[in-house]
Image (cartoon, rainbow, N blue to C red; front, side, top):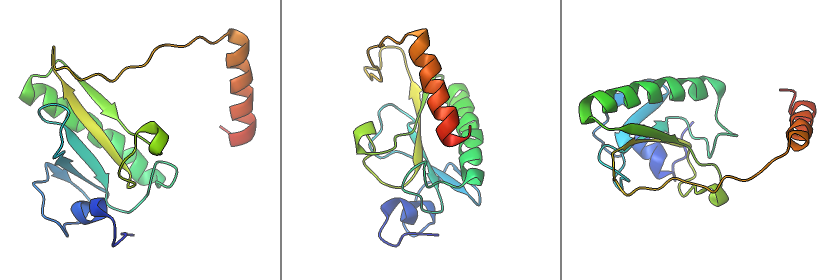
Length: 140
């Protein structure tokens, strides 16, 4: 289902022309017009889902398969030194467009892009408690 007011729905479904680098019935891959590095691409779900919590499982599966293909092609073609695969959910997590999408960002030595955090600390007891909470609440 498309959201007629969503720019990414329009891009993913051809209402706004793009130079797609990959497309199938569930996703479309395009270059980001505000790239972090040369070759930065977006994998767009064709059906509207605001975030991962609304995404159907078939599309979720396809996204990672396509991300691997795109990352592999980038490594071979652009000779990048690495690749970030990034997906944000919610404003606090950095999501700015509320249509599910995944970034595939080629990384180059000294590219100046930082995707970092300061590692925290957690005890084995805290890990065990979090595990219990997740398993009990979500039926993982």
